[in-house]
Length: 130
Image 1 (cartoon, rainbow, N blue to C red):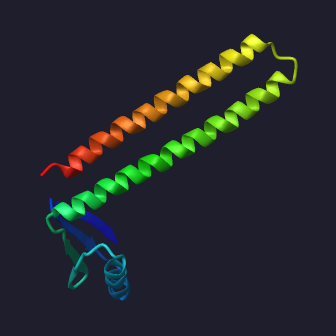
Image 2 (image 1 turned 90 degrees about the horizontal axis):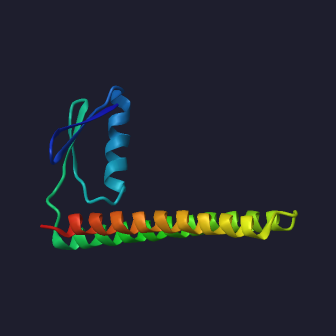
């Protein structure tokens, strides 16, 4: 199948195998996205409804949740890096070099966390804007 967006609020799916039309339509309905597919021969059209204030709030919460998950992942990576640096310190690596590596890793982590926070806030504001 091929997917296209002919209009801002319409998704068009051209299904090449006629036998798959029903399963694609059922999958869209069962996806809990509140979408109603319209089948026209080998074409399935999905009209996207206007976003309600409730749906906008829900989407903004999802953005926040995903950003928090990303931050946790970055912190876990930082912890792995710190553990690796600690192993270096036990292998006769100078203390000042270890400290520099730890500081650099922390600065890099902070910049990524700040970037995620900024983009998340921007996206939340964009979603909530009517």
